[in-house]
Image (cartoon, rainbow, N blue to C red; front, side):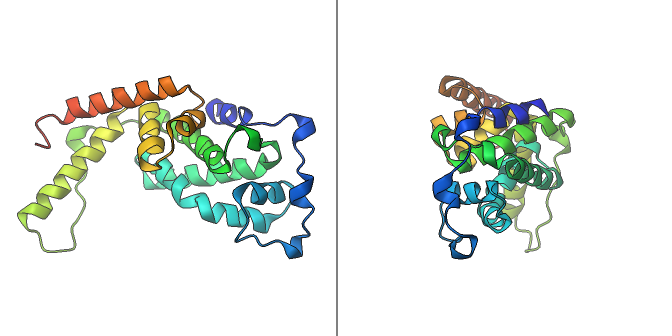
Length: 212
């Protein structure tokens, strides 16, 4: 997947800077993985500490899943995106350059590009075919209307181009700063603002009169 690979390459440290003696100097038995920062966990993982990577994965798996779900619109695909992102992070842990940004942003970048690739290969679900989710509670009119509005909104989001969905997932769902969201997508902040503006405009146009 060229987009995901580009995302990883953009965060690589020069070969001479890939080791982290300070982090790996802590003996494995003495490492407090639960309290360690992400950068330390990734450095330990790069040196072969699978427990450190498991701790890192536990922290970030929910966010990676949410990114995948927002971009692909599929729970099954979102699970694949999250697993793929973590596998790539494990394989490329030694290449991460902390001077370029945060570990969490790097992971979001990998997941976003992987999800975009998957979304581009999938056929969008037409707005008229939006599924209705079952409500286990009694079915008053207000609850029914809320379910219908949410289903329409979800379908409209799936009709957005994958990069626009990714921008919304990072900037709104994950609450990343403009700079971090742009870095995760390997674009400028101005390009990110353009994606968000077009996404909002398309959603407003598509849902005009439906959700009023």
